[in-house]
Amino acid sequence: MKKLLIAVSILITLALMAWGYYQAIYVAPNDAMQGEIFRIFYYHVPSASVAFAFFAVSLVGSIGYLASRREHPERAQMFDAWALAGAEVGVVFCTVVLTTGPIWGRRAWSIWWTWDARLTTTLVLWLIYMSYLLLRRFAAGPQMQTLAAVLGIFGALDVPIVYMSNRWWRTQHPAPVFGGAEGSGMDPSMLGAFLWNMLAWFAWGVLILALRYHMERQQQKINAREAQEALRA
Amino acid sequence: MKSLIKIFAIIPVALFAWAVYCILSAPPDPLFGDPHRAAVIAYLNHRFMVAAYTIVWAIQLGYLAWLGMKWRSQKQEAERAGGPDHLGKSPAR
Image 1 (cartoon, rainbow over the protein chains, first blue to last red):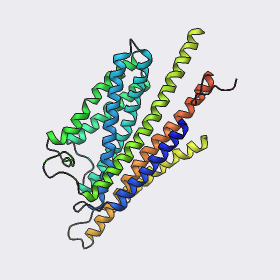
Image 2: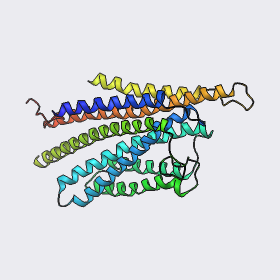
Image 3: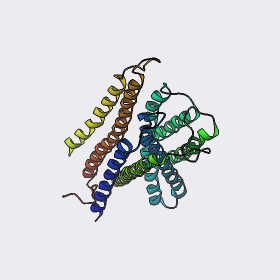
């Protein structure tokens, strides 16, 4: 039953990805000002949204770990696995944002990069979570998970700053398309393609997140078993 | 399974190389007054869009391939330790 559920989830996700791609490339019209390059938006913005959502998962996992590590060590390990999975998959999506953005910028602005508030805060967010992953990879000892959880919480503080950066400051980055000033929004002919891609990338992200979480839980079990065997020896 | 993961790992590298090629081999921006300016800009936009979409899949599939390799080594580690493997089944003793 579990295998069937996984297979159905994978099939639905792949169908959504294919449909989202079809919508973005063949159904949505070219942007009147930017032409075809605007279609990057259909991958760029959903990737940013998924990254933010998964950094939030990491935040909840980190808080949960710190809150339960003394009284409920097994639950704390579960939270820790969510924190790691959220941070890692979030970094993957954030990398997508930081590569597709400059490709669009090269055509729209004639420059690859500029140190404006939105771009810089996004890069800082990526660097914080990269340092989180490096800490988890190279630090050892019982304090590693606690340090990582604290870093995960601090890293998540940058997410609202990234989100609000082009509202608080004047940036080269385009103004918010949704929830921005008066007149912001999307043409209905483009909105469908955007929403389908949003759904597709969320489905893809959740699938990978679940896989990464499962793997981390397995690793924790292996580590615990090895530690027990070492103690017995 | 091992060769499948290897093949899966080659795809993102190929996609990344294709994306870089799309960008590096693109012609320079046309000058103002160029009679073919609109056509060249449309062509450049298309190439960069293809590069962006390709790079997205290079990153996503690259990560998936890395997870596959990690999963495989984890499975071997679990079998060495003699405990339940990824599917929760006890290995034959």
